[in-house]
Length: 258
Image (cartoon, rainbow, N blue to C red; front, top):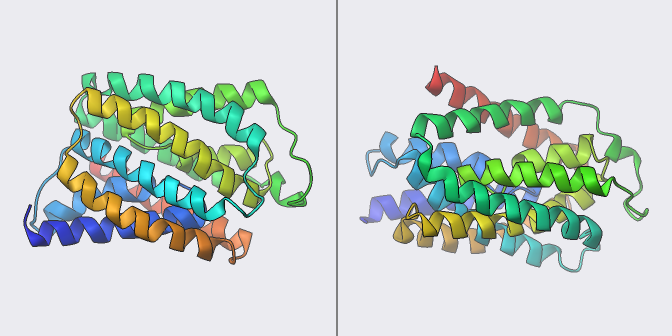
């Protein structure tokens, strides 16, 4: 790798991880299109969808690890949510990532585009979670939460993503989880998902370790900074940032597919 490629990867990883920590996502919704398009756009290197998903799995692992560490004393990490949704998403992500090498590049991008549209729709549905006090006991349908997490894990495993860009709106809109608990707990759930995605991608040889190392370093630096900023920002502002970012990504990916 030359210095231009390393610098490009570091900037991409830093931006994705900062947003990841601030909003409570793994960063894949930002990093996937950036890794797919920016290196070739600036003329440093071209990455395939399989390589991007493999690198992304490593990046999400370290981005969410840093974010969870920053939230460890916040009181917003809900143990029940993390246990039920985390175990299901881990199993789903292992299966999805393992079988992803049988899917074509166009197929992977198509799956990403579908999830991005679904995430945008969910983000604009009125959020019941905003009506709850953050210190209230969180009550949710455990079977529904586990089932949705397994499905998200399977699909996100294919993309090398943690699945938080679809997990967050589902937790808010369907499970009715308070916003800040969603942001913090989704990082922990996504961290478990990224473990499964990473294992499957490594086993099937889809990970370029040198570029992944650059993104890992950027993620460990940027994610805790983003998480610290996120704890001080208005929750509605956080939701709008996420909705706008996912909308932009959905438009870009579908323009490319069509």
